[in-house]
Image (cartoon, rainbow, N blue to C red):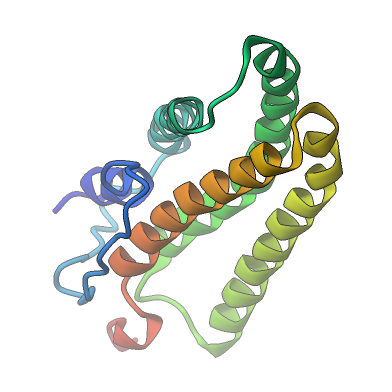
Length: 175
């Protein structure tokens, strides 16, 4: 399996249906990394653009807005998505680093990796919390809460796809 195929599987994580996703157990063999084919920024950016478009379509098809609500909401959403993209830049950089360096981690690098990953999770949660009152000013409470539910579900599908396809560090080849 090529690194580009792995990256596509990670980022697109199947369809964005809001139904529960089923995890698959990843094995090092099933997700082997080919260091001869490094993951490029261009590979990731193309996949991320498709992911952002799919996410917006999913939100649009599941969040029932009046024309007046849509006029106020979508500019706020676009700003939120841009702010989220800035955070996700760090996450995708870490994923690329992980894929390209799998098999080369030592204890210090592994601790640094997970600390940076969790820091990005905290930043994502903080961003959502910051946007709750902003979205609440342009949508009624139920629709605002529904937006955040849909947004989180889509992100959970992506995160589950990532987690189920990235090999566990302990399974990396011995140095």
